[in-house]
Image (cartoon, rainbow, N blue to C red; front, side, top):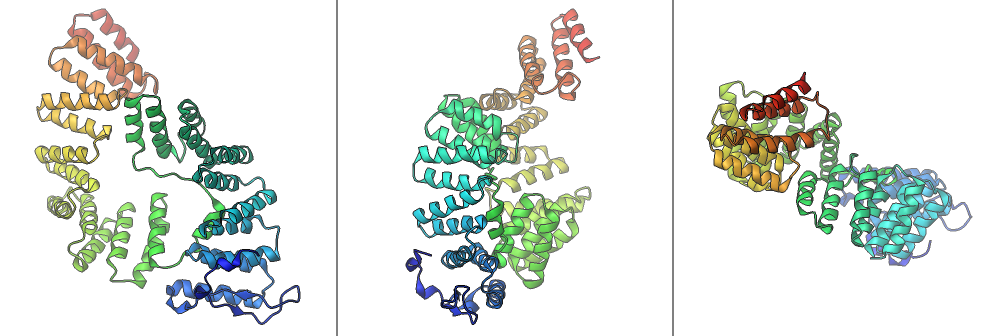
Length: 488
């Protein structure tokens, strides 16, 4: 194929295969890294095996494509492109290899070849939405909104259930500051699915463009930390070819994020057998055991990791989390607190450790320390309205009413529709005998609650009971009875 001179010859050492080419020309060559032995042992072994398969049947396009995937998945894009080029020369009607060839070309900076190869993949398989998405992404990255929109729109017609192209159209609308259209697309095609969190981030951007700052802050808080989930099974075939310890660690973390805990543990247990004194492997496996409710095993691994590296934050966090499961035992609770406090000594800004410390202090009955930890967590995550609502509830329980009022009001500034904050603030107004204020807050909370649940829902019943109490306190017996009738 054309364009090969840009490859760096020093990186590869072609191995001439003994068999001849199908066309009767010069024998095909398998490009190999100059020093295969310098690769990760797993990768080196896989490369040798894949090359040997081609040597056995050099005219098999799928074997060339398989070696291309192996190189591609491990960042050897120039070698991958050479293999893909040979594969499509042998089988020019394989849309998947054209697709991967295009991505490899894009990694190498040849945008023209990448687009041409991707369009060839589209011609061969017009039903795969990922091809349109890739083209849209490339044009969007170049600032060509019109052509990006063209490909995204075609993708939504080719594979309407694929979210990738809908997200692309949202990004186009936001780039043009057409926020109303972005909101409509998000609600129709993105929110509520696997991309709900990322969709909330985009929705926050749209609300800011519309000047709806309070709603923007609320959506940003709901979507914080979420990453886009953009399926691409074809490129997934490349990802699974990654080899080596660091790749396996990354893969295990991805499996944990997907809730596939047993699959992650299988990878990590194999890594532990290969690297028994690697603190990162021990720590990651300990974290996976915590997720699998295997606390004793997690605790043992955390202790091993601490012995190897006593100044590492994460093993102490895992130790504390594993001991939390045994917190009914006073000694285990104290040990958990000691571990989480050590973790916070090493990393005072760790939100997960701060939240864990708050929970453990609550278990111990130390309300002041628990509140201090929750307040610190709210400082680390200042727009987390659920966390702030918990802070307000604790402030109220500890008799710090002015602080609780201020925190509830802060929640409502961030999220005017926060029902529990309204109910909590209403309870304080009742205690202060400001009954009309309590009634107004509860009426607003009820209106919000009925948008998401009926009157049989426990939260709805709680609001109705509090509203009836507010009416009773003002001598409005008929109104109180009418509200209670709704509960029965």
